[in-house]
Amino acid sequence: IGKLKTLFQKFPVLNKYKDQIGKGSDLNKMKTAAMKDPEIVKLKNTVGKIQLTNQDATKVRSFASKHPQIANILFSTIIILAAFGILGVLPATLIALAITPHQ
Image (tube, rainbow, N blue to C red; front, top):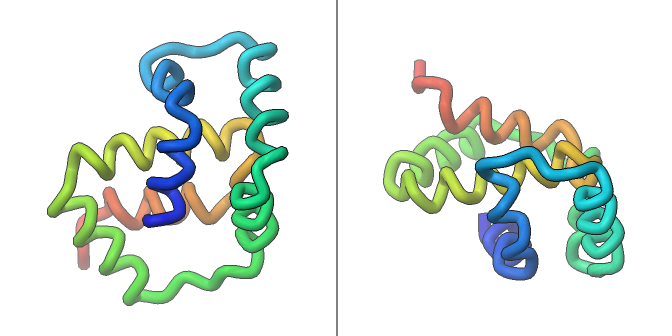
């Protein structure tokens, strides 16, 4: 979550994409800028190597329930980053875990 907060702070321009679909050229510019950031590249390169545990799911659910506004912003950012290939399956999994009721 901390790394995602950092990403959101670095790219406040992502905020405009929460409520509207951007042009393809805007997304390409954002992707190009993001891929020049070493922290984002490092995060992108670790996505496929991360294994999620039940404890991870519990932590994400807990965070989302305690901080719904922050979680909404982070999840929106994750969706945007995943949409143009900066992040992969892991963000979608985390979002699904956060919004799925605990069983």
